[in-house]
Length: 327
Image (tube, rainbow, N blue to C red; front, side, top):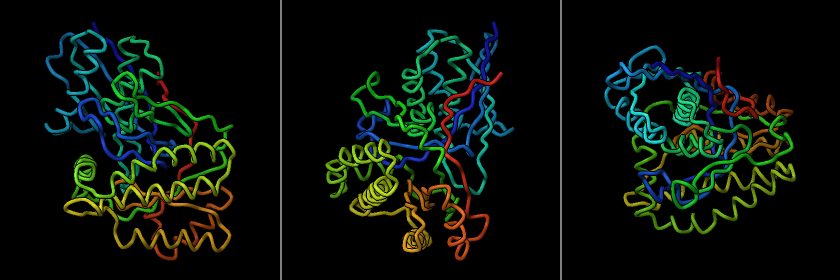
């Protein structure tokens, strides 16, 4: 018996951050988060289940993965096997459509696409909510990549209550875009997983982060509802900087930001003085993501180009497309 499925999922950028896990096994976050899905960056994954397979295999961008990556995928496939109650191994072929220099993690789109492909292949008939829960077990942010547009990940308190859902925006996403300023595409000295754990356990600023996150979520959702770009921008900047501040309070302190990150932030501030509204955010890395209205995108790019080269400036629209089944 051979069963197969293929799906596409887009990566997402958190504009209100998730930082810290309440449960590492089920990937339950300490706080809710909000993201936007990017049109330019996505993963396509095909999975085939066959009774003749005696192990899981993964080919990524045309090359077999190493043993470490294969173990991670097999752990996720064990979750799929538990969901489906079918003890079948799988052959997985996945391709990331992410520019090599972008320095963007593709785990969100990768696990969302894999979860959707498995759902289709095994005829699990999972709801979007339950598909989001399944994707979360591979990567927390994959929970959000099941959907397009603005998405909220509800932290919940266990496997059944931690899932993502779209935020109604009356198609406001169509007026917005994201500019990614690539500062450093090298491997991080502190992984996201390690950074989250260290700040949660040792940072004197971490409780302050948790104390303000619900207000940030409410403010962002109100701004989306009202299509108030300035209001949304101000809260996402404050939230992103607050997340990075928790790292400086850790023991030992650490930072993901580089001098060039601060240069990009300064250019964003300068653009606003020129009358080009735009706002920055940064994930667990040095790269700076800039949310901008499409009408001002090229003006902001022109200012960035005075400091950064063309390869460092990558543009993407925001997509309202969620999971797509291919074929």
